[in-house]
Image (cartoon, one colour):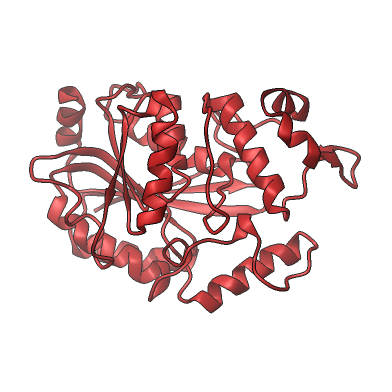
Length: 317
């Protein structure tokens, strides 16, 4: 098994990430005037929003999606995760780099590049960014029927997404790829932001820690940007169990996916995943460490295809 660790050299976003500069609130307010009500000077004398205010975070997201990705409609229930768009964009740009390696060092673009998003969520954020940035086709999976319906409403209200993004219901919560990837169907890469907490209580404590870091009281229900449905935040065994299951299940689809990938929250879990990937005979494993200010996250990627097979796959695309 060939293993590579790729570390970003600065605590900044990917070079192609459109959110590397400070938010231009004047411009954002121009595209979404409702944001103005939430913008004020912070203690450093700069314009910002209160990131512990759920309505402010949602308004910022709507403005960012309008300005940078041409999304006219985006709305989610208060009970679903409100994603940090810059960090989500980083995942997309880094997987584009990986797909570039077997594509004559050119970023593969267009609808023939197919991505499977495990647990797409009501926000549908990865398909939005991936399609708008690179023109890729996405299939998202979802356990929660209301979340699926919300994501589909976003798709149907944005003409550019209608023919390139679709959502499939995963009816068995123990399955990840099974009953989703159809016979003869292929994907260039699978992506996933897995539930990493082991219980509702752990998820709540995590949300309260984030609020405390923002200088807010951590009483009552966590606010929108730190809340989420059960399947978004936690599962039995946490991310260790979820990703372990994902790796074992990926073996059954090793010829139908060029790359498999997932975010990994806890660095300590990587050793376990490497051991399992060696056991299932993954040919190549990559770990990309992303640093965004004080936040560190990782993308774990693996493939069962040799380099020659990877190049052949790209040529057929």
